[in-house]
Image 1 (cartoon, one colour):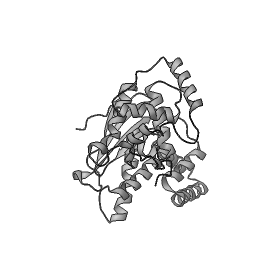
Image 2 (cartoon, rainbow, N blue to C red; image 1 turned 45 degrees about the vertical axis):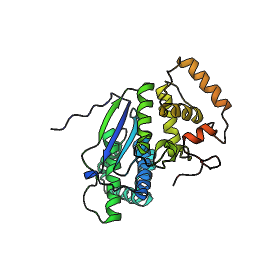
Image 3 (cartoon, rainbow, N blue to C red; image 1 turned 180 degrees about the vertical axis):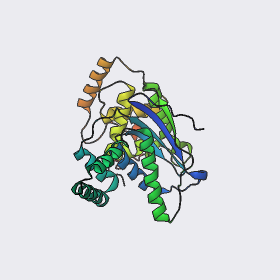
Image 4 (cartoon, helix red, strand yellow; image 1 turned 90 degrees about the horizontal axis):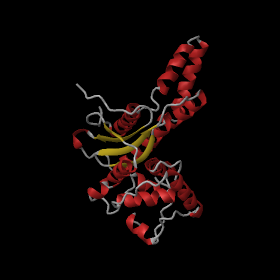
Length: 286
């Protein structure tokens, strides 16, 4: 009998882990590129927000925020379908729905839309969609049959406080360092911080959301979030300040932060993130 998964009432933060069957090392560099692209597509479709992640050769770690569900109208639903399915499949589904309407089967259209909406703002549906989508992609490209994943994903419900969120985020980022794949977190291309410093906007948004949640702020600029996150990975987690005072401090830092280059482009920051003194880091992520 399966253990019932512990879920938050409403908004919740979770550390999600899933492993390849038999601990096989199936997810090489190219496969991690594919998995990462699909992961970002699924987060846009589902509304589940990725705060940080690390994709490894035989498993992944993702720190997610599952927000409270909100109404998704038909226009937004179609936009989300295009992100997840692509234009060809979405247009085919829309044509089927139009045909059903013409035949007086509008209830089938509404049922199909309701089924898609049930896959949003839900942790289990997020993981199911990600793992199934990647399995289908992997099987098609490798002439493989059956699932490539082991047992069901594991999830840990987290307290949204500074120590918990920053500690779990740091643990996730340090996975490739502990595995001796890289010497510094920023060198790893398939992690939250690695993609954030290379310019991926979803990763930057996630990192800012994580630090804002940890310190109960309304919003945090990227340079400030990265500085706080760097400290956490190095083992120092700042105590949260008074919210009003802290927010004022963040706002002042945002005004001072350069618009073209984040504040961490100093020698200490370069060394920590595994960057050479002259290496460009704001290019697009593959």
